[in-house]
Each structure stands twice: as structure tokens, then as C-alpha cells.
Length: 81
Image (cartoon, one colour):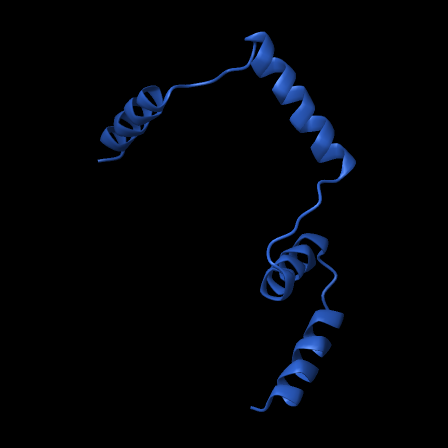
């Protein structure tokens, strides 16, 4: 398949997609190939990150050390076997 035909088929396929998250994922892939990875956070994402940062800095966030994570994973794996 030549480049022109492939671009045409991709354009047609993308024009038929209405799933915003899927289209954003395609955009990230294309943009990464053309310009390196760029991603802008929307206002909701910024607000969520700021809230999580405040919780972390105040010591109120539920956080785990790497050792605690390893122990939880190993414990869960043991329950699966």
C-alpha cells in the first residue's frame, strides 16, 4: 500500500471515530512522531493534581514506600496461586 492510499484510509477511519479518549490517544501517537511528546493537562486534571499535592504535602495522603508496595504485591500473588 502506498503512502497516499494509507493516509487516505487512516483519514477516513479517524473521521468515523467519535470516542474522544481514543482520538486523543491517536493524536498523542501522531504528535509524538512529528514533534516529540507533548501533552497539555486540562483544568480538571490540574485541579486533581493540585489537590493530591496538597494532601501529600500535608501528610494526609495515603502513600506507600517501595518496600510496602513489594510486600503487598507479593502477598497478593501468593493469594492468587
